[in-house]
Image 1: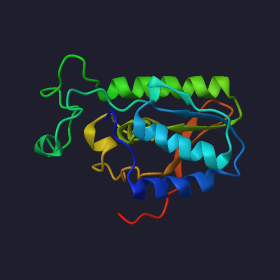
Image 2: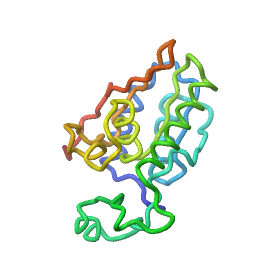
Image 3: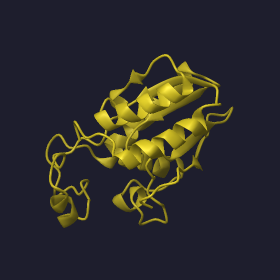
Length: 181
């Protein structure tokens, strides 16, 4: 959501994530331009002493007519904003999210070949990438918890590795301690 920042607990989680990233040879720091992702990237930027953040619309939250709706509206639909019966004309599908996310990954791999890149994004975006790279079907159960996946945690670091043949793998390499989990 626009203008939706980090809680105090969120700031503490990201501080732990930033400390985890501090000694890694990071060549670029990207982030979604939404406020909470910007704030997350700024905490990381400060801790790792990185000169700049590059903002990318490819990392934005899901574009949905449900954005800004009360949580009760989402609970009523079981958070399935991708249901074709509920989507409005400009709403993104899971396939749309997968396409733009993979475009970003391909861009980062090409531009920063062999380097370490940090990209700050949002839960459903990260879960869609995880589903694609794990070979899961693009459906709501793949990006939530229905297919044995655990939803990405706040401040969690998912590492995407690309081998010499271009094969991409994804794994969780850090989860901050949290007061809420």
